[in-house]
Amino acid sequence: DMPNFRSGKTSLNKYEIDALGDIFDKRLLHLQCHFGQDTLSFARMGAKCTGVDISDEGIKLAQKLNTDLKLDANFVCCNVLDTSEYISEKFDVVFTSYGTIGWLPDLKPWAKMIYERLKPGGYFYIVEFHPIAWMFDYNVSPPVMKYGYQQKEAIYEEYEGTYADQNSKMVSKEYGWNHSLGEVITSLSKAGLHIEYLKEHDASPYDIFPGLKKNEQGMFELENKIYPLIFELKAIKKT
Image 1 (cartoon, rainbow, N blue to C red):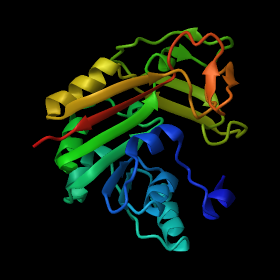
Image 2: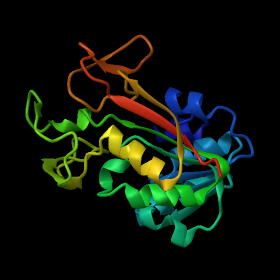
Image 3: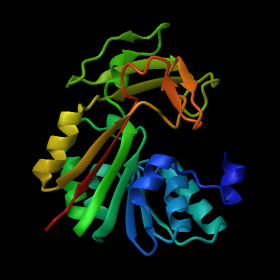
């Protein structure tokens, strides 16, 4: 939705807007920012933003958007786990969202880096697809439960199209990892962060799973709501 974004529409969803509240003049680090729409949406809200992503093309586009929109965000191309090697600044907020941690084989170095980049009193916030949703193989219809909730081995999938363009003829070959809520919480806690809350939600802002129905709020959910699609977590660096 680039035309509307350029004209001022936010790319952020209700969960993260409600959770972060007033971030004017806060220093915010956005992990795995892709091509920067969410980072720049925060910048429009008055935050001092830095976005990190491994994709050089994504970062180039983010930098161009930042210039075109006359904003002051900063973008860094690196592996998210190496962020502290590229950025020494400490932040009020570290943020990540929707389809990020599944690319990481191990959350311990990720959590350690988050702790390093937060100021005392700062907080980390993640809103992410629920690990139960990633237990299914969606390349068959109907989807079948195939992967473990606490599976350590990589999940390999090969399919035609991409998550950005499902009609593309490109063959996508993806390796990902499912991380249980226990693993997420424990990695952050052991890194030194205090867990303030964990919330689970039936409704997703994105229609990415088969069989979802649009509700009255414009969100997407399973008709039987048999398992949650989204979780959000906030963790604070106390010292």
